[in-house]
Length: 179
Image (cartoon, rainbow, N blue to C red; front, side):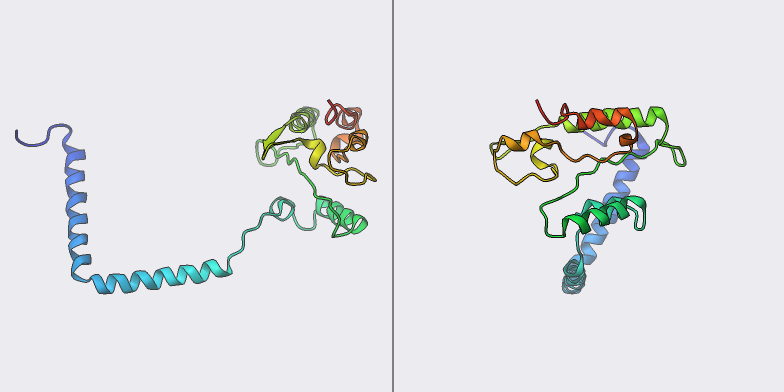
């Protein structure tokens, strides 16, 4: 049989790493009590850090800049609807491809419309139920009725920069949430 064959540099590097890891393993075995104690200290410190950690899942805190126009609009909506209302906002955030690029151009707004229409047609099946925009959107003045036909008659409240233009009516016209 003989020695290994192949490229010499990777074989030498692999042999060197194996020798270093073998030496490290021998040292750990000789001082196993110390290594176990230090490991438990590190584990305890990380556990204390996890205890004070909090996971932010509110999309408004993650994506909306504090003091921005969007945060003012969201605050106004919450004031008018009340904090304990069933209202939750769903957001479609458009960012420029390059930093400093204007996203209020005709092409960018057309892309926003296409993305909003595509997002409004998404359907998800979960736990034997089908969910779409019509099930989760906010509808002004509609009583909450499970599986009610009357809720389909009211449009979802969709706020977008496209509301300033005729194209914004495509999202409000019913095609986005009525079959």
